[in-house]
Length: 251
Image (tube, rainbow, N blue to C red; front, side, top):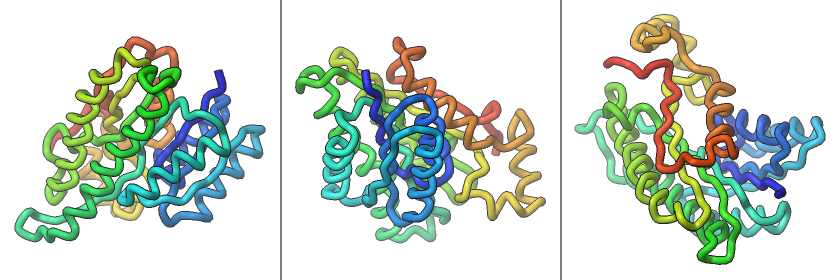
C-alpha cells in the first residue's frame, strides 16, 4: 500500500524532522506550513534529494477553508491520505491575570479546533464507514498537559490537555473503522521554537535539572517515536498517550 503522510506544521522543528525521516522510509509526504515557505521547500528538497516524494502546501490551521483545501490538494498530488500527523501549534506565555481574549481565541483555534478539523477531514477519507481503507493519526500534544505546564504556560497546557482528551474519545469512535489515533507528548525539545531560550545557560540548566534524564530532547527522538506510532509495529495501539520527555519534569 502506498503510504501518504500529511504533516501540519511540517516546515520546522519536530514536524520537519518527522517529514524527513518519513520520506526516507518510503512515505509520500505533504508538508503543511503557514508562513515558513522557504523552510518547507527546503524540507521537500531534502526528501527528494534522497529519492523520496514530497510537496509543500500553505495553510493556516486556524482557518477551516485552508484545512479542507489542504486535504484536497494533498490527495490530488499524492493520492489517498493514509497517515496524518497534527504537529502545527503555537505557544502562549502569560499569567492568567494577563490573558487577552484574542490571544486565547487564536491559541485554541490553532491548537485545538484546527487539529479537530484535520481529524474530521482524515476520518472522512480513512474510515471504512466512508469507504476508506483505514489509517493512522498522531496528534502532537505536550507534557505540559499532564501538570498544567511551567509557570506562565497554563493556557498552552490547557490547549494540549484538550488535545489529549479529544484523542482518547476520537480513537474510540473510529477504532472499529480501521483508524488508529494516538497522542505524542514531548517534553522540552531543542527546536526553532525553543533554541533562543535554551541558549541562555541559566535557563537551560534550570530546565535540565528539572528533567530526570538531565537533558533536553532532540527533534529526531520525537520524530522516531511518532513514526513508530504510525507504523504497523504499533498496530494494536490506539487512544494512547506516549510521553517522550526524559522521564517528565518537576516544577
